[in-house]
Image (cartoon, rainbow, N blue to C red; front, side, top):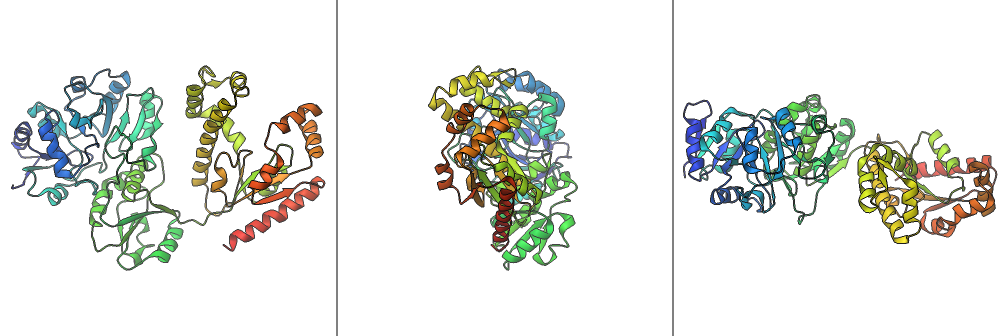
Length: 541
């Protein structure tokens, strides 16, 4: 088969492409995001050609490209108001919406799902092709499956010369990464893939947004996904890619220690001088997220060379368009990432109430450490985050009233039912651990961190600590402290202590034990010596 390239500016190009689409053939089409490999989205035989040409897994759904927002109603049902608001705000543009599919959409297009992804591309010739063809065009990115996406007609030609009849050349893609995908089939909109439309822009229209875990981490291969690009290693050159985060100085030091002949560095234009000895290639300016999106795939294609061993890739920070670049780079790396910044000590502190943990924490803070109080984090999550409240309400219906937790009602359930208490702990421990990990990721290198959690081991937080320490004290001292501190009777203080794990539990689990057996000043000095000892050990490892 001869593959023809036709300029999008030529008079008959759109008609020629449309006739091929109607005939069940494949046509590579330009969009503002990336080039797509298009076929009649309602023709199962034509759609099957897409999967064969790309080597695409059959469980990876396709996106239906439509000519205008009104066409949604031809292929989707039960369309929520949010879809119309998003279409008005961002179409034509780099936004895809997942909606319930009508029966007219074949299962091969939706990967067997009851939903379909639709978008109206911001490219005049492609919308004209759709109009002339009279059918929606199913079009994933035109690259061979798993490889870096195609952002020029030449990229498509390199992958599909002799395999498809026509490539419509619309010049370099303006955005450069695939569209943002938002799922509107659940109670709340869910971001499945970041792109040129940012989470902040979406929230301004729909009011709320859940970030799917596929955006920031790998998911299991048997997971059913609603949109393309969520599950498989994707956008990757043939060589290994390792994302290196941290300052450019720390990254340069790490790369120098691990660099081998044949390796390359993918970096920002501002960093070319720093990485000059490592054969760097820049994909845009760190200060210009649009340039990073537009240049990423062209750079990854340049690095798609079997002679290259490893690519050390720098990724931008941020939650706007930078999130799309982060996502594509992490997918290319199979989520293999290294933080080049030297990490400070992470100390886990636990023990029963009234033992004196506050004294240790104050010493730690005065020495420049950062405190993460898990009880405080839990209460912050109840006030500022909906995910924890949603999880509690799902397991304990009626315990969340007007976005506020009815603690008395919840306590009445869980404290009379050990199984219910275990379920609640699993929910709260999971939410707090996730937030602690997020904060650790954003902690500057070298700063020591103390995680204060009575459930340090049950929550799994002990696993992220360099060392753990239990603070203990004689029972009578604990009783007196609780009576004075919280205005409790002796019986109330004992009841609170007995509701917690015994001292033996904390002693057996922890790496160190600090016994608070003297006066306050004596224990403070003991904490200071202990902390300095830990820092010395950390510096020497």
